[in-house]
Length: 509
Image (cartoon, rainbow, N blue to C red; front, top):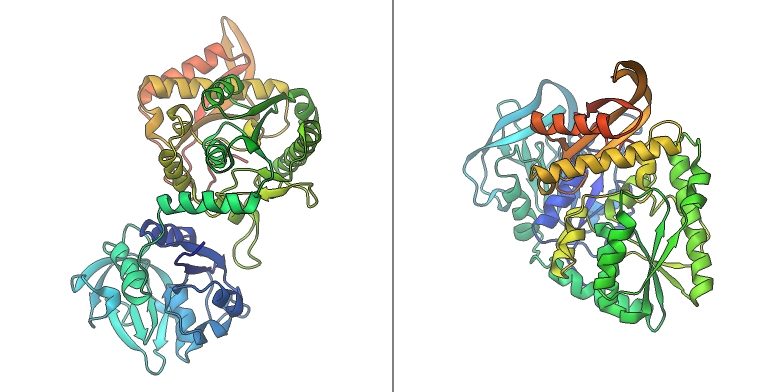
């Protein structure tokens, strides 16, 4: 695919993904790569520019992460953000030191030099700072182009090297979007070719070339990601697509029935397998969530290999892997670590009999939803909340048991029903219930009884990389709690999760 490309080198900053998303929002493709990606590999990708992210380290510390120094010889515009600025200063012969005038939070930036980076901005603007180190000596041939009260070198420049000590990617920086836009358009010369319309057209062409005359199996879960993959594949190869819907017993209430009805209307070939007993027997009493993911992923491949042999020869397996799945499942061998193994990625065995088709491997969740709208995925699926590949298995904390599975499924159904009644379902990103091993005293009738504690989780987000808990009206929470304790056996308490991502994740495991 011929596209513009901004490379974002990840030094472990909490906003690394946010930088990538902001660039994509400006209609330019951006890709997050490990900080130590070789200059040769970067050059082979022919990027229009490079961004060095923030990070928790100090450049003067031993073993602090540093990029391949040859990236500075490529002649490609580079923007360093926070720690990224300090890398540039350190590499070019300046010095960084711990400062007594640390800046955390809002600061007033005074622009002192007319540069393309600040084109169209007022001379004073609010920015968001988060640093304890600062530039002590500016390298030769560099100039300060902006300052704050405590940072004389809040923005620097030399030829096509730029650095900002603040974070333009966060909304707290008033003109952050404009600064990033200036970098990619005015300095890197991008034209804004990354749109979901072009992605759809290019991906359909790519699938046709990739698959040729072969047939494809598509792992269909009924969620937005896999359903959009299925519809896109159907547009590309028609009847040579066979969707396989495997009920692993970990689905939402009535999900299998609803999915089969929808895909029958779409006239897409689908094979249904009920493998509930097979999967639940594997998971019985398994505590470790990583082990559960791997067991589910490995068993799925076995099922699909059996299906392939029963229904003809399939070389290809398509699935709805997303960019965050790939990033969170694989350590970058640097500051970033594996957060969790995703069902579509780390859960797969090394040797499988299929070649994988993952059309959305480069997309974030909200980008997939935009694709779904463009290709007219039915609203019954499009409006569904995200649902993990391992299903309810990741919402059961502690031992996996059939009783806790039932509690989780029934309680989650009540949560969604009450949100729909209150016209809140489509205003939140995700809502569900989870259950662990903890129990609390309840009073049923006139009797005292120990029952499970169910925790409700409702969050708002745009791409699932960050999320905030939703301040649901008390009367809605009251209805949810009352229904769960009245209608779901062996539940005595209902609690509400109020942790955001970060530091938590959206799913409990």
